[in-house]
Amino acid sequence: MKEIISIKQIEKIYNPKKIPVHALRGVDLSIKQGEFTSIVGPSGSGKSTLLNLIGGLDVPTSGSVFISGTDIAKLTANQLIEFRLQHIGFVFQAYNLIPVLTSKENVEFIMLMQNRNKKEREERAISLLKAVGLEKEINRKPVELSGGQQQRVAVARALASKPDFVLADEPTANLDSKSAENLLDIMERLNKEEGTTFIFSTHDARVVKRAKRVITLEDGAVVNDE
Image (cartoon, rainbow, N blue to C red):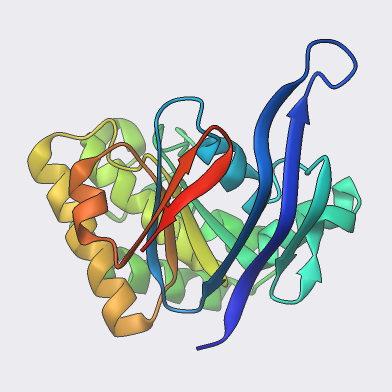
């Protein structure tokens, strides 16, 4: 399978001129297309920092982050925004849906930013919402949906841009057990049937149990990868 993420000797130091905090220490990592991977570790281990660097939400102090052949550590802020839009899907624990938009409009929004035509946006949004089991909630706004339903809209939205991979930061943290299992069922199915690459940062044992690969961080370094 094609390698889509290649991280080489990543260091991330916060407050380097005052009291330095070494969030990541010389991390090397590669992820191939179609993986279903969890990044785990105690609080302060560096997993959120690593996810932010992979997602282009932060930049490393040193080292390189190659996404689909591009070293995003060398991109400008505006170039990073455009790169994220075209290549990376995000699912956050807080859902981050736009309250005034319907489910369909929330999924369409990222395609609108990509300047796709209206017909394509609508057809893909409806298809994705059906794929996550929300065909009856297409015209409902977030306030009319349960937490589990909102997170499924977020998954559909993450897939709308046809990203190279989806980053999911604690996607089950705010969900009850049944909703969490339903969400994981959907993600697992998308991984198996569509070949969608998922990378999770999580404390949830249910997510870790389903992962095909588990990367463990401690004190900013990879201590286990299996």
